[in-house]
Every structure is written in C-alpha cells, then in structure tokens.
Image 1: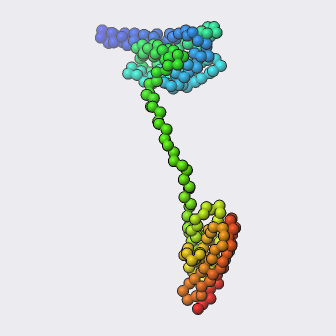
Image 2: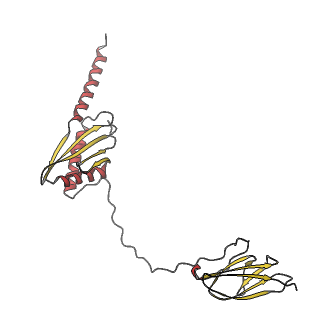
Amino acid sequence: MRPRGASRFVFIVSLAVLLAVYAQAEPKKKIYNNSADQVFKAALRTARERHVVTYVDEKTLMFTFETGRSITSQGFVANASVEPEGDDKATLIINVQTKKGFSWGAGDRMSEKFYQQVGDELAGDPKQKSAVKAPENAIAVPDAKAVPVEPSMTKSAGGGALATSNVTAAANGKVSVISVPDSADVYVDDGFVGNTPATLKLSAGKHTVKVTQDGYKAWSKEVNVFADSEVNLKASLQKN
C-alpha cells in the first residue's frame, strides 16, 4: 500500500503540471486601433530589440521568438500573429510555450508586458532595457598632413641595398648596379647607399653613381633617371 505522504506528493506534482500546461495553452489576444501592418512591424521590432527572433513570415504576418531564462523555467517560445480587423484595427495573438520547467503564470506576465511594449512602440515611445549613451561632441579634425614618404632603403635580392629617396615611389626610377669584383661600395650623389650588387630607387633627374673598392680606381657614371624607368650599370673596376 502506498504511503499517504507519497500519494499526496504525486497528486501535488501532477496538479502542478496540469496547471502549468493549462496556463500556457491558452493564446493571448489584444486589439490595437492600428492597421495590421503597423501592429506587425511594431511587434517584430519589439521582439528583435528584447528577445531572439527565430522565424518571420511577412506575408502571413507571423513570427516566432524566444525569451531568456527565469527562476522557474528555461525561457519561453512565443508564436505571434496579427489578424486584420479593419482598416485601422488589428489583433495581436501570442501563444507562449515554456521550453522546459514550470511557468507559474510567467508566460502570461510576459505576454502582458509584450503587449505593453508593442503599444509603446506604436506610440513612438519604446522603453529600451539598455541605456542610450549621449552622443559625442564634434571633434575638431586638423588639416590634412602630408603622408610621410616611405624610405626606399631596403635589401636587394643580391645582398646590396636600395638608395634612399625623398620622393614618392611613383616618381622613382630603378637603377641596378653590379661590379667586378663585387661587394664594392656604392655612392649616389656622394652619399653612400650600400654595396654591390645593389638596386637603387632614385628620383627622376640626373644622378652620379660612383663605385669604389680598396686597391681599385673609382668608377663613376652620370645617369638620367626617368620615372618608372630601369637602368642597369656594370662597373668594371681597374686596379691601381
């Protein structure tokens, strides 16, 4: 024979389940003195701003959204639909189901709150959950500055160097210098730029390229560099 206490516990649990199912099985309805399209858009905006919308059918004026968890349940799934009642009247129907657990009337409270939020949205006075930050004051922007020129001194494939130029790459020409013997010092306009073999990026115009090495006579050449041009120089050094 089952103890009286156990029977009472089973009865209470069963009654609670039935009450919870019954409470959430009844769809809620509310009539607004607005067109069906206005009510649908206001309800959809409300759901997107406060919950998670999972399905939308604009043709039939239906959508589904999910809410967050509460103390007694793991959240709700709500089906919302709008039925036209005339040119300036529509009914918003909400059917709330708990994901898991007991609602204890929380689904009904959520529906009533949602109806109020939709009314606020229609009135143009939505009360957002998150605070809206004040806009930043205008920030004064200084006059545009010239972009610093990227130095052209980089390593070449042969281990030499690239000459430094104070003009943009678009106005440069390329001068490749090799020497016999190699690893000689390279100067451009009396400025040391590296060792041979070297690839030099020089500004358009005339430049003097000089190649020197200990025990050899200096070699020099004046070149006229054009933008986007390429010149190849070979310095055959003579011994002193």
